[in-house]
Structure formats: structure tokens, C-alpha cells
Image (cartoon, rainbow, N blue to C red; front, side, top):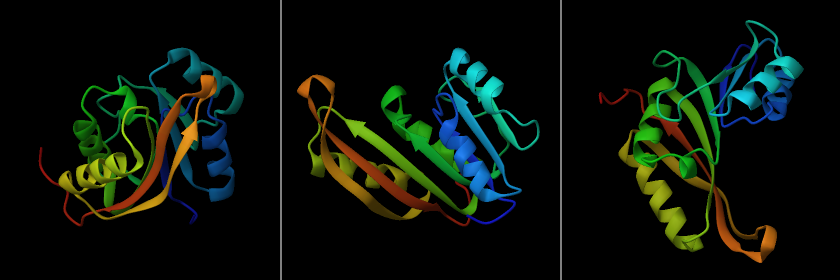
Length: 164
């Protein structure tokens, strides 16, 4: 990660991963958003540094940032919690600068490995990302023994944002 980058973490929980990325970025700006006001309050109290390491609540659909604000977005299981994953991917694309990176970590309890990989890669291409690649794809065992497909996809924002 390069200095002075702006990073956004979707569904950041108590913010520990956001803080770790911020420390490694040195002079960067990192922000975590979460739909839980309780977790955002905890993250702010434990880790907040005004102007450089911040946490905000969001409604799960519209990100509270201007277009092309971030160089990287890291999403942890945000798509599985929203009603329209394609719309969420388009919103992520909106806040990314052209050439910016997105990392999507997702879990699907119903689809098999090949199904989730194909659908996630197709979705990110549809909303204006290119060079999608599976960073990791594997079957995981959840608490209680339930099996699920877990995937991380990386893609880059196209040079020109699509108009919604």
C-alpha cells in the first residue's frame, strides 16, 4: 500500500482491520463503514483518529462519500447482507477512482464453488470493473458443520465510471 491512499472498508465491525491497514499505510486515510451503529461507536471509541482513521454508519446501500473518492475498497460479506448485490457493486464502483481496486470477500451457503465464482465475476464486470480475478476460492465449514463457498475477488475500476 502506498502512502496517502484513501481506503474504504465495508462492514468493518469493530474496526480492527481498518486500523491495521491504516497503520501500514502511513499517512493514508482509512474509513470503515458498518450498518451497526453500536459497532461504529465502538470502533470510533477504540480506534478513531479524526481526519485519518474514521468510522461511519451507513444504510447498506448508499455510501456516504463523493464519487471517485477512494483508491481501494475492501468489502467483507457486504453483498450477502444487501437486497441487490449488483446495485451495491455499482455503488462501490461509484466511490472508486478510475483504476482503483476492489476486493470482495463473500460467502454463499447455497451455491457451490463454481456458481459463486462465475456469478461474482460476471456481476463486477457488468457494473464497470475489469480484470476480475479470483484471489481465493474454497469450501469452508461454518459453526454447526454447515458448508459454504467462500471467495475473494479482486478487480479494477474502469477508466470512466458508468452513469447510473
